[in-house]
Structures are given as structure tokens and as C-alpha cells.
Length: 161
Image (cartoon, rainbow, N blue to C red; front, side):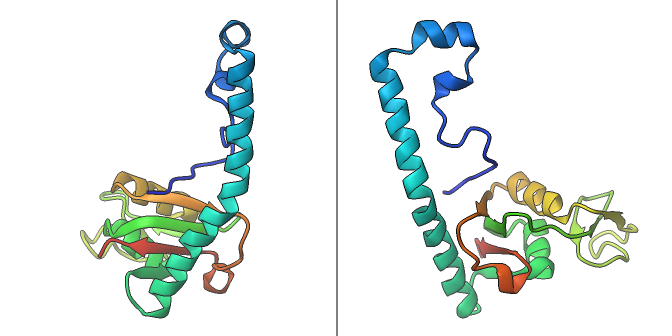
């Protein structure tokens, strides 16, 4: 399972997140070298792993199989707990609507298809997709090095079913 939730700790040694005092006393030269090596490997592997995830999505979407493409399909799949891996281009976002009763995400305004509650607008459609995906046990990956999702509004997903 691939998960990327941001850049803050990407490629950072665990001791680098520790308070200064504990870093100074716990990090040996060997440990620092290992952490630097891991950060270098993570930076080198990231585009390859990203390409693998994007290729899997492209293959499934091309066969009209277990993939969602674009905001409408992806928000629906995330709300239905079908998303195994949510993929989005860095910077992709759009307004969307959320059901205050059940949390379902939709692209257009109206009533929730499940409980009839009036949908509320939000400017953060990506936040809705990420929340629904993680709440239902899926993973999230920000695509930073490839433009595979550009033709589908910058968002897509690999589906469980």
C-alpha cells in the first residue's frame, strides 16, 4: 500500500523530528550516515514509485476497470468506500458539496442521494476526497513528477471493486 500525506517528513530521519537536545545525544555518526542514505534513496525512488502507481491507474482506466477518473467519479467512489488508492496532481482542487448528515461528497449541489439531506458547499473538494478515502481505509498519493492525471482534472483513483 502506498501512502503519501505530505512533504513535511518525507525523507527525514526520525531523530531529525526529535527535539534538539535528544537529537544531539542520540544520533551517532553511523546513524546520521544511514539516515542520509535513506533520504537519498527515498528521493531517488519516489518518482519511480509514483510512475508505477500512475501506470496502474492508467491501465485500469484504459480498460474501464477498477479506476475512477475526474472529480465526479472519484468523489462518488471515495464516498462509497471503493477507493484503494487516491491519486491527485499536486495543486488539484475544486469546489464540491458535502452532506452534513452522512459526510458523502458530491460534485454538484442538491440533496444527498442516500438520505435526502441538503448538500453544503465547500471550496476544498480535495479535502473531502482525502477524508473519505482515509476514513474507509484507503491510501493517498500526491503525484508530483508526472502529468498523467492532467486530462482528468488532476484526480483519479484505483478502486477496490
